Image (cartoon, rainbow, N blue to C red):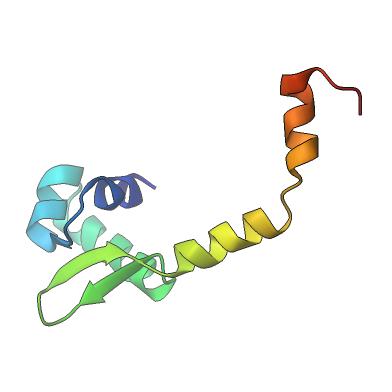
Amino acid sequence: MGLLNIVSARRAPMTFTELLEASGLPKATLHRTLNTLVREGLLRHDAYTRTFQLGFRLLELAHEVWSDFDLRLAAQDELGCPA
């Protein structure tokens, strides 16, 4: 999650070196974690620019959340309405 937060805070894609500096993780740990995040679609790797950016799987997950979201139920506590 920390890496996703780092990448999402930057507008531009990040290189491995930038992620290494920003995360403070050991090089091998960062490499394994990035590979996992790319494999799961949470990050995308551009082989040409050698950069990482957020992946489309995040949009799919967000869609799953919103498709089951009931605004009335979520707002009832804030509005002081009974169930």
